[in-house]
Image (cartoon, rainbow, N blue to C red; front, side, top):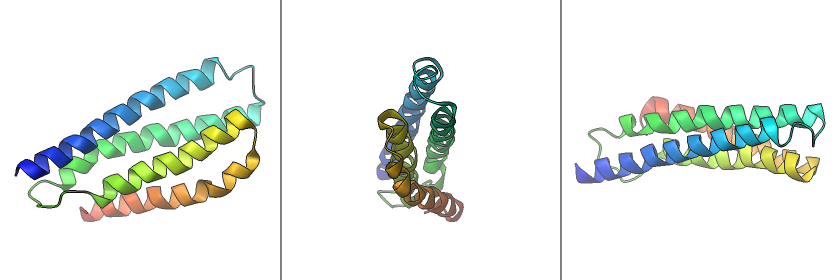
Amino acid sequence: MAANFQTSSIWWKAGALSGALGVVLGAFGAHALKTKVDPYMLEVWETSNRYHILHSLALLFVPQTLVGKSTKSSYAGQLFSGGILIFSGSLYAMVLTGNRKLGAITPIGGLLLISGWVALGFGV
């Protein structure tokens, strides 16, 4: 039972910290980037931030899938975390650097996020 609590606690903390970072990055985009990037790139930032916040919330549900299980990790948590990093991270980097080629890896993050939802649904 202790292993489940520890693992659950890790995903709860990861979701909370990711959510906090999402709020910081959202505020940065709304205030600091507003006059620095073109409207399209600001929209890209907002999309990245929306998915970041949404999937940070999803991470908070991961511990519910671990109740009563002896697993020490969660595929859903790993997939959501990787998806946030690659999907939102690539878009954040694209806006900050102006390098639109970074958008080429964004779909990989999207697939990880979709897989995270499937894993969450099946409790793995």
